[in-house]
Image: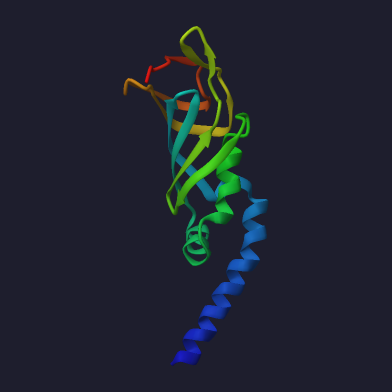
Length: 150
């Protein structure tokens, strides 16, 4: 029985390894972004991305972890500078763009930035916890927020 399980595991692992280049060629087709929440935090933009994976990619992530999808998630925000992955889960990720907002006269100004593909729902969360929602966007809007004093 153990030998059968071991054989099945090896076959699945080989299939996963062979599928990785196929998924890479398909680009972002295996990741379906459902919602992005952009929180404005002291000049940084913190992105909370909710996404779904196609069934094969989901198996791959469950077997080998989320590291392989992180470049695709960072690529969504390729127009932003200094984007790093803070946390990745099988259906959610948190990314940070340091210095996304420019400080001027007591305000942080966040210029509009292109996203690598259409996002069905984009929430902007201001430091005062006010939220604005945009639908079917391919760029973040130009926004500003007052700098909070410590």
